[in-house]
Length: 454
Ligand code: SAM
Ligand code: F3S
Image (cartoon, helix red, strand yellow):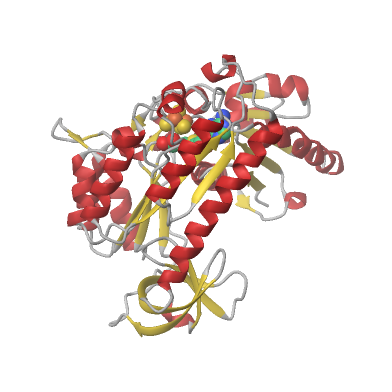
């Protein structure tokens, strides 16, 4: 009987992607089967996040629960991957000696060997090195599981924002070769994928080496991917303002397949704080860039990330963030956080004398404004007709279908299962806090061939 693996993941989209690759590599190379319940698994993998303290704290309590599974099923292996593993390395096994495998975001493809050695009595296996791009050469060909797919095009981050652990846990930026990405997307399209989401911590820092010796940036890659037969919608996550070049602005003007949505973290509306954060741009530059993108693609939805309570942020700097938010209007949503000091980052050494309750109050005020902006934008969509790729049954109510608007809002609507995988014109009939309601006005014809699993 084949062995079984269960993967639990925390954190960002990159981690969700990596978690799937962990299962893929064990399935392809070691004959594993992926299961949905930890109690059925021979190998339990936790893919961790250390971007904020809260996520990191959860790791050891989670492992404590898994220890009990292991006691009930001797021979079970427990593995820890992701950013906490990368930072702590062998420290994980010292604190939790029942852990058998510790691997980083760049070594997850070595899991089959690590599992074999641990099973062979080799003791705890620890490998959190950064062997460049070897990971992608070693991972099995991705298989489509629906009509949308994530495609990782670059790894790591070289921006070293003063508050962030990612450059230390995931290593410096490295881009996958252009031709590899194009081939992967073409293979996914052949399996029925119609929408791809290009992933990277700083995806617009993409500089993919090309066979002719030159480099492709994200704008050029988007042009090529849009030309692939079957690929009708392209998204990317997440971009950095300082890497946003003219080619990417032009892609919004020239490539209709590029979705009308942009997630561009600003972090703060104060130039002083942006400098302390080492973000590499000023507020006015961010706003000018947004104006250019909005001119290139009228109606585009803008999302962002914001940090409040960064060391040195007084009431004045916070008011600048509120004022910037009012001017820019984040109609596509926002992820906002209280600053969390991360050991080993330069910002951890800055004096931070704002009381936690003041920071929390600032966050609440900012979030109320952001939510109002988002709800207002959702209400404006009511009555409009949106091109939605029908992804399948809705999770909440399987009798309904679900998909996303170009501006990345989930819309649920009555429909029939044959519509899955096709674009439908959906009239928005209602706006809720996290999703829209709609009704189908037209469905694309002739039908596209549906992906067949072999
Ligand atoms: N590459 C993206 C960018 O351009 O900023 C961000 C990637 S980061 C992993 C995701 C988000 O987590 C950041 O945008 C930031 O808002 C938040 N974040 C990172 N470090 C943080 C910290 N120490 N405290 C609070 N939030 C943090
Ligand atoms: Fe982190 Fe800044 Fe990179 S937020 S992921 S160091 S762009």
